[in-house]
Image (cartoon, rainbow, N blue to C red):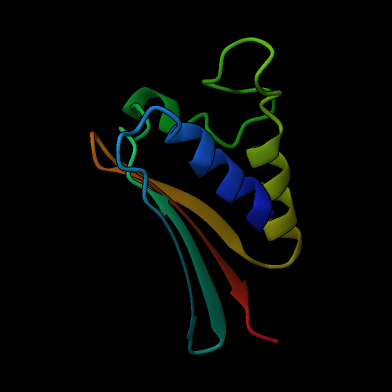
Length: 102
């Protein structure tokens, strides 16, 4: 799942002149929070509500199946966690997942 989020961030930054990928992991009380951020153009607001649905992709035909985020979302939920995205226009996107600390 983490590899999928990192690969998606790298794909998003392919045309960026100064790509920057940040992975942050921290423990917050009884949870672990992991964030994967890129500095690309961000995710269009109309796509945010669809981003975790199966077969939804913003990639060109033949470049993605639209299953990676859906599978990642399911894995996190099966482990009692949450996966969410925040995005700012022209400032990139951050995918964060929170899991119980066991």
